[in-house]
Length: 466
View 1 (tube, rainbow, N blue to C red):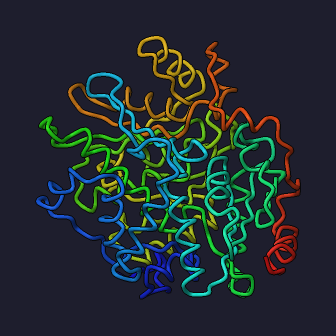
View 2 (view 1 turned 45 degrees about the vertical axis):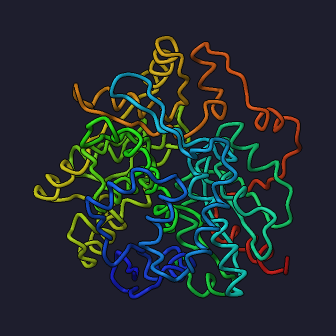
């Protein structure tokens, strides 16, 4: 298995080098040279696998022997031993033909743990076995930061710096990041939005001299290992819902802002998983909904919403989908990205738009609809949705047809977003791990969203030995 850039100038990269490179050196995103195809008989056998066995089976297609089998199995076992549910990502039936895939049973109560526990342990393994220096730089709209820090804190040979938009994440998300006092962790709260942080991260990674000198590694979903780990739970959910019930295809409704989680579902479908609809659920920052409906990808005004982890205008994983939309032609991708940089938008043709509509359906959920969905499902089913999952459920109600089976991805525990839950006049109890955060001191530095200022801080933080 080799990896190539969506822009064509980075090729023939192995799995470990792809993990270390993160963002491709030509500014594109790394994708597998060929997507593995899983035959129907193999899928049938995989129905009985545990989550860990399934993760090993799927990830092995991409690792392709670069990590010895026993080492990979141990990495996976270690990564998911920290989850509170033995199934790792259990599927819960809420109504007839309507399920939620609970992705919040990891250490930070968010779906990002599924990928970042694995990636953190993978980085530690690479550092130990190859001697590579691992200095992680990432940006977060809320959940990635806490999950990434939890995945690598205290690990020998690894440092991590996370940027988050000051005042634009939930209080619990902020506390999960900033109450960590480890010498290998630096939290920077930027005066700006997640899009500002993500842009700065990409600009810093694009400076190859700086990237190499300070051994920068990516933990955002620009790193393909993130996407790969998330692909596993689509397979797991499908098997839990379909086996023994005569269900042939399943819809997935996915709350998404950066297009990583929904792209993982797209990848699973391309690998052979019998997925029917992939429903893109957004909030008022609905650039993805507009693209799927009209073929125009153009950022609008940034809006703060009840679902802050989806408050994103520029979705970094969108470029990966573009690559497949134009039949893996890197020249066309490069032309689109040049257009985006110069004109601030991407416009696809009529034939390409037909393909987009065949791949996805979408629904943008406004704040009132989000809160009403939380209240409705709590009153009628006694199931409490966090505001992001509520967007997914609202999109399911709009896009799913009668008789179709749908799984909505439950991306976070509602306790992480109590500000929204309280607006529904619902009082919830907090898990002990979250309650105790409010009594801890915080450690963060508030700075401008300025690349040069951030680069200066990184030089200091990443230079000394741990």
